[in-house]
Length: 220
Image (tube, one colour):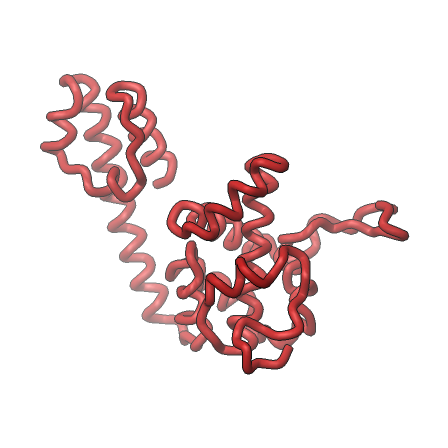
C-alpha cells in the first residue's frame, strides 16, 4: 500500500506542485481525482486510489481476523500509546517479545531488536563486529516502521529525527529514533505504564539507561 500512496503523491507533486500527506491522499475521492487531472492522468490516479482503498479494506479484514484469535495482553494497549505504533506493530511486538522480563537491561532488549550496532570495542576503539543476524528481524522491522510513522505525527519525534539527520543522514536518524522508541517500549512493557513523550525526549539520551523507568515511582 505504501508504494501506491507514494506513486499517487509523486503524481500530484509533479503535475500540480502540491505536497500531499498520506492522510490527505487517503481522503481523496473519485470526484477529487477528476477535478485534479486531465483524463489520462485521472485514469492512472484513479487506479492508484482504487488499489489503496482495496488494500486498506483487506488489511482491516486481516487485522480483525488475527485479533479475534490472539489472546491480547495489557502490553498491546500500552504499546499503542507510543507514537508510530498501531495495532499491527503493537501485536507484532507483543507476540515477538513474550515476557519482557527475560531481558535484564534495556540495552539487552535494544540489541535483541537490532536497534544498536553490533560491535566489539576495547578502550573506546572498535575491535570487531558480532553477528549482525543475531536478534529478532521482525522486531527490528517493527521499530523502524514505528520510527517512520512517529517522525510524521509526533512533533518531538520529528525534532529528534531532524537533529540526527542534520548530523549524519536520514538512515542513521531513523535507526536512532527506532532505538529511542525501542527503549521506551521496554520500560512501558516492564513497568506496565503508558508512554510519556515529554519524559522520553527530555530526560533520556539515546544509549543511556536511566536509573528509573518512564514512571517516577517505578524502580529500574
